Amino acid sequence: MSVCCVCRKRRIVGSDIVHHGFPLDSAMAARWCETLGFDRIPTHHAKVCGEHFRYEDYTSYDGVTRNKMLKPEAVPSLNLDRDRGCNAQSKLTKDELLRKICQNPT
Image (cartoon, rainbow, N blue to C red; front, side, top):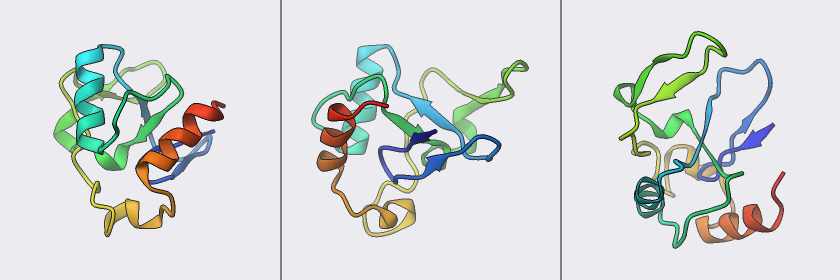
């Protein structure tokens, strides 16, 4: 099970919620951080759920795991406002959540 570092939605086996890890490319990971309001790149355990990406950000299903695949240039752009969307469910600030993820990788 993973948790979205933006809205805290959990991915449970068998659910339709998709979680994406931060890009391995440091420049692209930095763009994600800037968009999400993080001051640094989180650990490799940090995930962002599919509710923060547009339909156009996906290429297709990979055919093996049937997971949605993001285009290499995709950046989270939806439901990022803290006062509405899925961020409204979070009680931690993004910085607090990032610190928690970095301290307790699961």
